[in-house]
Image 1 (cartoon, one colour):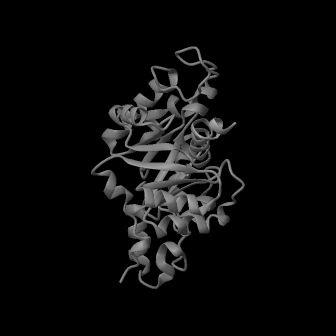
Image 2 (image 1 turned 90 degrees about the horizontal axis):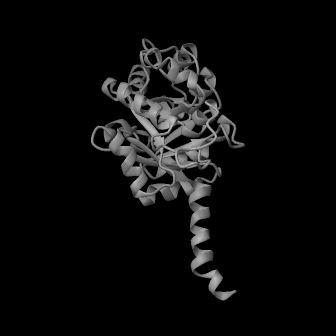
Length: 272
């Protein structure tokens, strides 16, 4: 009998509706557990901007699995070993930052998928294979290729400049669009309102690029992930209406900070 904690299900959910998650910067597994209790679909576990090494992510992945949240790990770069280790630890998907070339796009797939899609190193003595206890080798690699997500990031103009070629690489499951880094790669210092929000997705250059990605990726069965900034219903609905089906609803620091600000303004300020 399989251990249902380790069964991947995000792809199946995405066939029915958009999915929602939160980025985890803090390294706090308890925040990930709370996502499950709150009904979120995935945890975006960030090893790029945080002091986590890839091999230090085990507790975070286990926390997500324990509450039925899909753990998606952002590794530090397009690297086959980092990608494989994250998946072997039990991540349901890998998010790979700053993919700028076709070769890097192919590396994302090669590190995550077994043949014939990729060249991922094989071992069943890992958590993803339940240490070989309930899954034989063939079942493991077939299940991994079918259910685990490869999610390169489009956050540089080099990605969109060769978008058709990027999306032609087989084995990619989703594209995570990063509007802030994309805007900075174009040296866009202001948004359409004259402000300096690099996350502007209202007819900005980043918005145009995201719409192009959506138009070309979704017909290929490739999902699109993007952040709702700030994480409100209105902003999430705008993304979903545009065709985004993996929505990032803020991050643990930002959401915790916003809650503290509300407490300060609505309660603490009245006593001072």
